[in-house]
Amino acid sequence: MSILPIYLFGSEVLRKKAKPVKQLTDDVVKLCVDMIATMHNAHGIGLAANQVGELQRVLVIDLGAVEESVRGDSEEEAAEKTKQAKPFKSLIMINPEILQAEGNEKMEEGCLSIPELRADVERPDNIRVRFRDGNFKEMEMDVEGLLARVMQHEIDHLDGVLFFDHISKTQQVLLKPKLSKIKKGDVEASYPVVTGVEV
Image 1 (cartoon, rainbow, N blue to C red):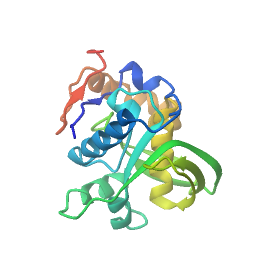
Image 2: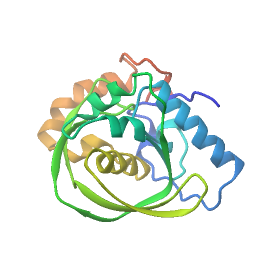
Image 3: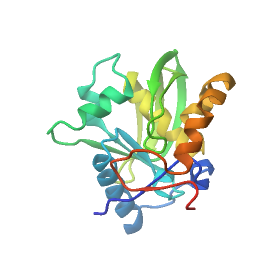
Image 4: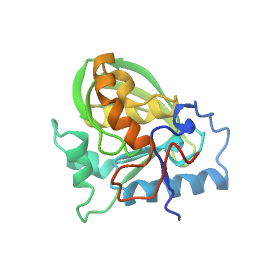
């Protein structure tokens, strides 16, 4: 089990589309285990393979943090709850795809690849997803609320999309100075990172 560095905004890998996983190999299993360890080390509630420099359609979610949060908690509040001494329950999603989406809710989001930057993002509140689990068994789930939001956020990563792509152009312009600092690595992060100018 290894703690992997998280790629920051400006890294090309965050804008590339990840490739489907064709079979469960030892390398894919190791990636999943390392991603879970990396997510927990960074006190995140979700992590996509692009964020650790791997272009494979794999993501992990800390279900314990999602379950501990109450409806209305922001992602930041949910992530704060991961710092409590409780057992972790991780969900591995390989080749996830959204089959249906409905409803709309706005909530503040953040991202381990874009530390110190948060914004309100509107997303569907109820989704149906299909994916393969950690045993490569095909699954379908209906999810809502924070779990649906985290899944959509991480699936976006696998498609090269970042959360601030969903906000208005005016807001994006206002965030440019902060994004420029993040790209250079001029941020406080309690976990190892690779800056956008290093790659």
